[in-house]
Amino acid sequence: MTSTDNTEYLIRTAFQRFGQPYLEAHPNIETEKFKAVRLISMCKTGDLGYNISICEECGHQVIHAVSCNNRSCPCCQASLASKWEHERNTELIEGISYFHVVFTMPHELNDLIRHNSELLLNLLFKCVQDTLLALCADKKYMGAKPGIISVLHTWGQTLSFHPHIHVCISGGGITPDGQFVETRHKGFFLPKEVIAKMFRGKYLCGLKKLYDDGKLDLSREERFKDPQKWKDFINSLFEKHWIPFVKETFNGKGNAIRYLARYSYRTAIANSRIVSVDEETVTFRYKDYADDNAEKQMTVKGIDFIGMYLQHILPPKFHRFRFSGYLNNCQKAKNLKLIHNLRNTVYPGNPYQKMNTVTLLKALYGTDICICPECSGKMRSLPRGTPLFALPSRSNDTLLAMC
Image 1 (cartoon, rainbow, N blue to C red):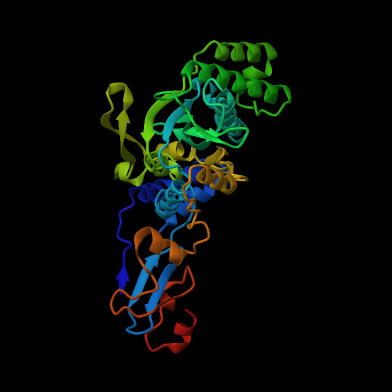
Image 2 (tube, helix red, strand yellow; image 1 turned 180 degrees about the horizontal axis):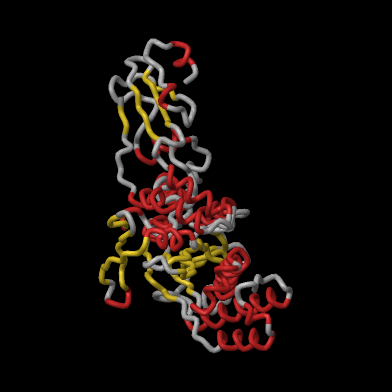
């Protein structure tokens, strides 16, 4: 019998220990957050059943506790993140530059965004994409439509609420007449001040329209129900400098996507950053960017840690990453084929898109779960979530036939 479920998930321990007290203290918690607390607490514990495979030849059994598959769980998203990285790498163009840009929001907007997350985070995505596409269409900069991948983060290193979007943008694009051109600029090709002003204008105009249309929830921002105070607030934001940060310039395929993939399926904090969980507190590591990226530790009450984590749970069906430009989902395959034809290269397609679990695990990790690790016989699987008491013996032909 083989089992590989020995990893210590301290973040799961934190949810097991402090999740229920948090729920009792917050009886009106949103459904999505309630589900996250319960499922993260049960992830890979056996409470959700087991994945059981049995060799038809020697009877060897491989047992794994079932993952919760909640998208906010940091314990069971590794294969999805790896798949995402491999899929995105098939969409990169060899030989052109890729740039990493971070769009942040003034902290004065944090509370408004937190209480109107779906509306205002969707607006954030739209304004980032519209800004970059509008400037890239200008012949002064590129005169073409680039490929853009945007990934939303809502957290800082200390789990504070800090909404921002990481963007990977190509240094080349498709022109209106169907040609592919590369920017001639050295380094990042769009002036940061121009980006900042356009982005600020688009976002605040969109915000004003939502306010005028009565779509914003202002129940926790009573002051904004006074139109003059709202106007003063918007004017103060127009006076602030919204400076996008060009974090790195990526050269060649892979580097850009590798960075984004680390966060594509992660919420708030990785399990590896949790130092300890005791009866009352949780301690985790963080980088202090204000102190030359020094690594420090923070200890908080366990119930506060749960609340800090849950503020980063996204609304149902809200997509954390989005594609635009020539990578727009509706035209992606067509545009990539065109670009490769123009550059006399071969478009590899996305072989991962339609893979089942068995084929995907073999492609990503080189592991064939259908082959017995003991005798190389054929492994067959019981239904997902099978309880251990249903584990058949080798001679039980009836149960084995169910595999």
